[in-house]
Length: 455
Ligand code: HEM
Ligand SMILES: *[C@@H]1O[C@H](CO)[C@@H](O)[C@H](O)[C@H]1NC(C)=O
Ligand SMILES: *[C@@H]1O[C@H](CO)[C@@H](O)[C@H](O)[C@H]1NC(C)=O
Image: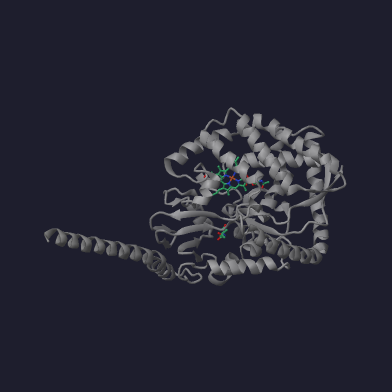
């Protein structure tokens, strides 16, 4: 009898524990998807910061998807106005709510910071309040748990090794490797003179080739973890991750997608062929200027490290291209604890977004010719081009977590362009469709078809 009673009490006890646990889970969930968003929203509203309203669970994600679909289906805004096409939500909301607005990535609030001073504080991160956000597991698989994603002591150690690996002197050994890789690519081009080639694919292969050669052949790269990042990057480039589709339903989606993009392609082709022709004339001028610079510095010789640093005109052209089409469109940080940013009190658990693409396309910073390809604006450097808002040009980020591979990238681009232009005159193919899209990075949706003619 006593045993049964004891069992009864235990069961009642256990089940009430279970109920309590469920209740706690529910409260926690409710707190996360309702109470916290509402609290953050009113905290920001009371400071005059506005944005699209929070919707239960999905935040503003549905709106973003719809805006993107709409933007991508309109072939009208071509030229270089890629901002309103690639991030229509940032474009629209900054017009509606001001440049300092906030939006909801699901139940995660994201504050857009825009002012020069704010950006400096966030990215320089002097007081340690702005951390790289925890990455989603699928991204961790992609980048590994290395330099790009870690924080704290572990990051510090990796970064030291990487800084050393990509330091000025270290490039001495990398340049010949880069040159050989480009030579291999140009070898493949030989049969294509006068014909069309697709260089987006070629450049992906080239980059992965260069990275694997320099990383695995170089004695400077010792950190185990560095190898890991570079391998991942090679994988990203070479395995053509952008075309990866979910198995099973992949086929269905693909046909739909392909029909859609086929139609769009035709529309765009028809409506802009004239525009491209005009632009191409301007581009050809710059191609000639850069070629002259290369021939003056190197003649028919392969590029050297000293020569590369003197390619001024090319550097302007590269920067202008990175301004209009920055591969990384924005930088993200997480606010660990509530903090003050200028006059603004940012509640804890917010993410802060520095909108590089938007900044690169702001007429207030760059002038009314902001949507034109005008490398001349960089003739006297970044400060002059941005009217002293150097934090408005962020292709490689800024501060302690800026791109460790920046010089590597500049060197690769400069060597590749030099060696191509020494040999060939490039024109866009009539088959090229200008459709920059965001798939991890900005890239040309239908590839980049050009024709080459021997100089
Ligand atoms: C045109 C080419 C490239 C662009 C536009 C680019 C852009 C960027 C940007 C914007 C960041 C900063 C992200 C942030 O602040 O949240 C970054 C970080 C990084 N990049 Fe690049 N990158 C390029 C090429 C490379 C290459 C070639 C390498 C390696 C060889 C590389 C390795 C890294 C690493 C390791 C980080 C993380 C650094 C850290 O957090 O300490 N990048 N990159
Ligand atoms: C650019 O700099 C000027 C002062 O040099 C400043 O008044 C302006 O607010 C800055 N623009 C942005 C977007 O921060
Ligand atoms: C191009 O941009 C880089 C920073 O990304 C800068 O260091 C370099 O001076 C710029 N070159 C020119 C000509 O503006």
